[in-house]
Image 1 (cartoon, rainbow, N blue to C red):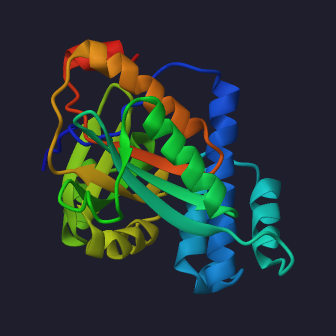
Image 2: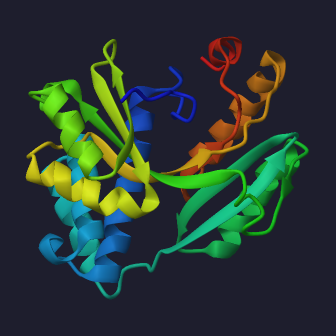
Length: 249
């Protein structure tokens, strides 16, 4: 079963690698902390924590960092994080912002400021439900899969909808419906295949067609959202043509 790359997150080669790595670690630490506060510090009894630890390992996070994040989540006196989402437009492009914050007033002010700066508007929750669909996305190094044919049959049986093999970057990407995310995670565990990342992403159902000049402006919008410490994930529905991908590099 072959997949497509329309919905894939476009990784742009810009910015300092150390800063990017630090941001990735920060996001995972928050995810682990929230998971512990919600379901306890035992990964065997807490699927969300187990997933957070798997993502930490996939990002090559040191074990000490993972342990500190778990301990922080278990500390009753530690800051309480809440998860919130924001939806809006810049021109014809829809943006869905996922945040984890200890101060929602600060977060909404920052998000609104970015929208306003570029002539955009912050909408109400649910206003983009017809544009984005939540799907399970698994990225797996090809080296972790010994037999690709057997792998494909196994994950299709567990609910995989799309399988994309990127031979150039040696990555296999598997997508699933929201309701099949858990069963696919269990299947990978049963197969002893460790993904580089496994998470629920918001995939566009409707795409906005823009020109390369507009794309350059929107790169800055995406960067500002991603640079905010409270922001975990940024999704947009830009139709990624070759011309636009080149402009966003």
